[in-house]
Image (tube, rainbow, N blue to C red):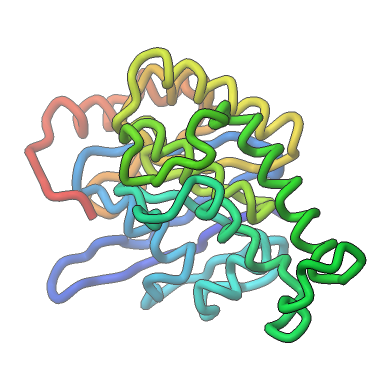
Length: 261
C-alpha cells in the first residue's frame, strides 16, 4: 500500500477536462515529481490533493484514509502541507510572523489564557516559547536569519519562496507538496534548495512531491517522476526512464503554449 495515492482522479471545468483518470503512487520518505507542459493539469492535481478543488471522480488516499471529501484545514491537520506557484504569504507581516502562522495547528491556548502570556509559568507562555523555538530552528535551517524581522513585501522573490517553504515546514507535515519551488530563484538558491530538500527527506523524514519546470533539478533529486499532458498521465518511472520515453519527448518538443492549470 502506497503512503499516498490518487486513483482515477478526474475533474472538468466547463467543457475542459483538467484531469482525466489520473492515478499516482507516492512511497513514504521519497522525493517524487510531477512534470508536464504548461496546461498539463499539474497545479489542478495539487489543488485536488489539498482540498481546494473537489475531484468529480476518483479517490485520494493518505495513510490508508480517504481524504478527497475533506476540507483544506482537515487535510492540513492530517499532515499534508503545500507551497504555491505564486507566493501566498502575508506581505505586510514579518518572516517570523508568517512562520508563526504556520504553527496554528499547535496552538493550544485561547483568548483568556493568552492574556496571561506575560506570566512565564503560564501554559500560553510555554506554548509560545515552544512554537517560537520550532520557528527559530526553521529559520536557521533555511538560512533566513537576515530576513527574520523583515516585512515579506520587502524581500526578494526567491527569499519569499524560502519563507513559504518555511511556513509549510512549520506545520510539521508528513507529506509536503511543492508547487514550482525553484521559481524566481537564482542558480545558488536552486543549489541550496536541492540540499534542503534532501535534508527535509532524510533528517525530518518528510515525503516530498513537487511540481517543477527546472528539469536539471527534477532529474537530479527525484526518485520517481509522473508526467502529465492535457490532464492525462502519459508516463511514470525513474528519471532515466522518463528522459528516454518517446511520449514525454513528444509532449515537450511537440506541444504548444497553453495556460497553466
